[in-house]
Amino acid sequence: MVKSPHANVVKRPDYHASGKIYHQVFVMDPAPVRGIVSPMISLGYPSDKFDLCDGERHFACTVPLRARSCPPLLNAIYTASARHLSRIKKYYHGNQIHYGGKVLPDLTPETAIHYHNECIAHLVSLSDHSREAQDENLLAAAVILRFYEEVDMPSIDEDTESALKGIQIFLDVQAPSAVAGFGLRHAAYWIALRQEIITAFSKQRPFRLPLDPCEPYRSFEPADDYVWADRLVIHCADVLQYCFGSDEEGVPRDSHQSSSTGILQTIPATDMRIARYNELILFETLWTELGPPSFKPIYTREPDRTRGEVFPELWYLNNCHVAGLQFFELARILLIVYNPKLPRLGPSQRTAMRSVDQKVRSIVLRLCGMALSNQHSPPGFVTASVAVGMCGDRFTDRLEQEALLEFLTKLGEEHAYPVFSTQESLKGAWGWDGYDGME
Image (cartoon, rainbow, N blue to C red):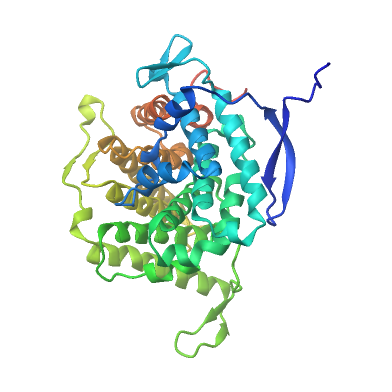
């Protein structure tokens, strides 16, 4: 029997923006790994990438247990784990991957693609059923898949964002109960929000997940530190909406609803934008005054330039402090750059732009310092790298430029994050000798 030349070419199920399903040819689909490899892959599941603001660590503790009876969730874990194990240099001995004292000869980078396709296909088959759309396990699976897509951009179409579209389908149904409740659904919602912030910031595109259910979090009432961290995440999402818009904006930009009369009034768009900007700046002021002292670093040290240091040291007690404050710093970058009051022309324009660049550079260095000082929180490297990628062109000091490249190299080598294109873009922007930015 002659094997079809298309036998190993799979149709990759994907979500259309409308929520409908379409298929596209993807990649060669390898056979699943067997024997001891599958359970060893599951042990390599990088749960520390998810449980930043969750004291109960649902993605470390609950998700693996649920996965034993939920095939899409299990395949999502296999996807993330296989990708993680197959891209970290320290796990390689020669051409084979070693993990947990075992040799995993059948585990390759293509293994993750197989499990990714299996998980997507399963989610597609369930997404049109209202009962399954309420399943928090499927939402968690979509969140894990999005992590895979974020760290595997060189291998897949960077504009596809199929896991995001899957998340949207489940969140359209689950968002209200996710925000108000507890447990895995609640944890998955906040992870999805943080993922969306990273993507929207790096692509400078509208925010695509619903924020209306988060209204109870827009408060400065006393709360635990995990809630405070979530408030900082929501603030960053609000700032992104201000800068780039939202896919679900219902009120025209030149309209404003009076808080006293409830009447929709027509207000010049510029005035409305400045008013909204002032509200977001007010959050910064209130955070400084009312934020809990537990978010202050337990140790700080400015860099010693005579020793070649450029990043400050900032130690924090908990991952949620690092995560919340890093998103707060991303929001600060956006508010500095998108300040509607900046002069566009005239003698003061150049001075204002120099001030903007100086402030942004300071924040980027602080973000990198926070990541390096708190390596117990690996996602801090990703958050800082987004700022480096989007703002690194503003650096003119060679020592700082080299330090930023070294920071990205560390992220790539130790956390398997794609950094090459960012590094090359920065070299081109800096005009380094011998580099013309051409492929």
